[in-house]
Length: 158
Image (tube, rainbow, N blue to C red; front, side, top):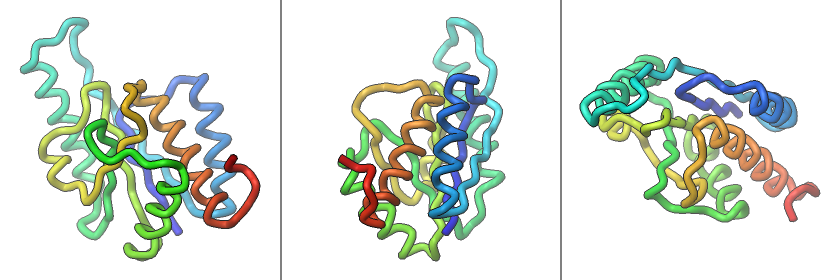
């Protein structure tokens, strides 16, 4: 099994500790790969045009790395929210349906480009709350880990 996470932007040190811990924990369930892509620099108070251009550039960076047969799931505030048990079922179904491989994409501060959204096969919502994209990475990894614990009937999920 392989899970890939495409993430726009570098992770800060205090998040990195948690990310590294969940990567280590997940290693007994699947191969996990995080592809970190540069976020586009923009001004302190960017115009809508500047934001749109940055999103498009970031989207192209991701799209150049995605393989045609890759099953891609985006994180999107406007999509379905899952409980941890529902997410475990989602992970199980998607891994089974797509040759034991699934990829997630976490956009930058301003989200995903329209072109990247068109390429996505499915979208989920981690929460209706807004998180920094770095924290979203940590939350996603924790929920993937929790999903594997649930699917294996192991103690962790309460």
